[in-house]
Amino acid sequence: AQTVTQSQPEMSVQEAETVTLSCTYDTSESDYYLFWYKQPPSRQMILVIRQEAYKQQNATENRFSVNFQKAAKSFSLKISDSQLGDAAMYFCGLNRDDKIIFGKGTRLHILP
Amino acid sequence: DVKVTQSSRYLVKRTGEKVFLECVQDMDHENMFWYRQDPGLGLRLIYFSYDVKMKEKGDIPEGYSVSREKKERFSLILESASTNQTSMYLCASRVWANYGYTFGSGTRLTVV
Image (tube, rainbow over all chains, first blue to last red; front, side):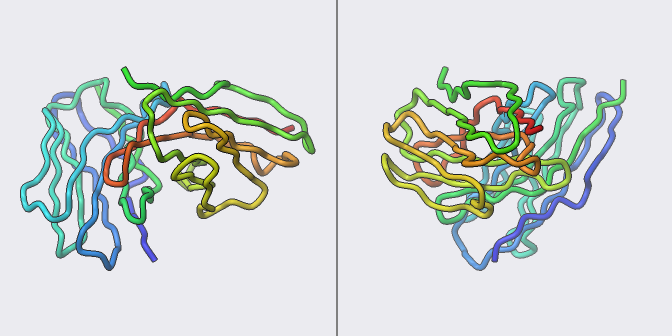
């Protein structure tokens, strides 16, 4: 069985600060892909970042970066210089067998 | 810009009605997916399709069916709507297995 766990249902961060969202997963495979998606109040799910498991280097997209610890099966998302527009639900996803399994999500609040 | 379009943003239906949720993508993607999103439960996969006329059950297919007669269109059918099918329904597509999804903007269905 494969699972994706996001242990923080909600988090808050002060504007311009850095926040890290946690995600752990379980898989018996050695080759897989991991994703972080953002869902703002508009409901449109947006791909934030993608990580290939066989790549050692952590993926980065502007202010968004991941800390990928393959042995620990951990895939956390770091948002630097938080902005009001970062307020959203964030979903971690694990791809296997041609479909993505998602965690339950973390709601991120940005405090002005 | 590539697009996944869900025909209705909000929908209210009566118990027992047959309900069609339509999803169209303009990217010539092979794979299409239907998820439902509920608070505290995240996104759960209902059905998916690898190609025209192909369909696979996801984690929660009971009470649903799908149709994919053309590559660009993937319909979710609630054969006899019930109140426990009140939810947000998200359609997604992607070109091949290891890419992230492109999502539609969701249909919020209320069954009364």
